[in-house]
Image (cartoon, rainbow, N blue to C red):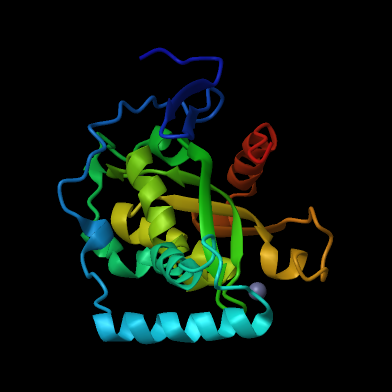
Length: 243
Ligand SMILES: [Zn+2]
Ligand SMILES: [Zn+2]
């Protein structure tokens, strides 16, 4: 495959794959990204019906005390819907990233292997801050220098959401994504950048309404190669995920 002087873009499931022509010269053809094993829902949580009933009564009591009129057609099932939404927003606890598989590459670990950077994103995510149980949401970008294994974009998206759909904090989320990718692919390096708006601070007026929290995580080659980090961040600078 000849070097492509221009960035090559492919879209898949709302996320964008980019292979840069300057340093990332290897063009990877992606295998079928579908995963046969249901690693994203391997340990379903079991909540007994009598517990659901009790939770619903508690939520109704709290909503009513805070001012909600639970007698209207629009709100009589709100406690139930709220709990269901919260349950779905934390479905990430049901998955196990260790069951995710990566695909082999043809890497011979030559010089080219060490400079090929693949950058994925933006991958949108919604999470719940564990301090307030209020949403923080934004986008993840992931960069990696693969070695003998790669991972498809659809699986990368599911991996991000597996960790995001929990009660968590942005720092842990990024660490978990980076560590999981290191375990799965044993790549030469991983970079993860999360950019998120936190409703717990915005709704309460603690912070500027449009402020974003940015956290970046480096593994492997990225930790000691400033040029690799610069290239990763420069590429992200050309993307405008939240508009
Ligand atoms: Zn290699
Ligand atoms: Zn919070």
